[in-house]
Image (cartoon, rainbow, N blue to C red; front, top):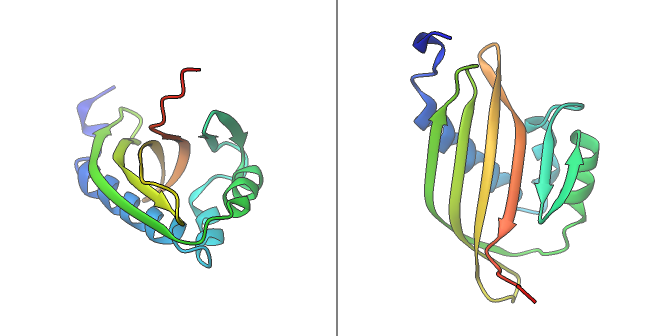
Length: 133
């Protein structure tokens, strides 16, 4: 693999993707439009330990979430270029849903390139709740 396959705009693409994703996710009326960000067959999501594959299953999960109001603070967005032209993104932040207390969260995305666009190939979300019982 040569270094020129690394996307030089990986940081801007990563930050832009995260911003767009959370604008859609955080508004229940716009959440269904997240479907366009995933691949119908090959996208994977792990949401709080539950693994899903494909747009249909991912969207069933996302549209089944019942909270209406989200207060999200993104602390950091760290991106890395991948040798296949993709981008690895790690998001750290704090999330408050409806009247629940705020919790830290971590979300990891892997974007795969298709021509001049990207889709979310991998999405792992976990609240920072350490229930060790």
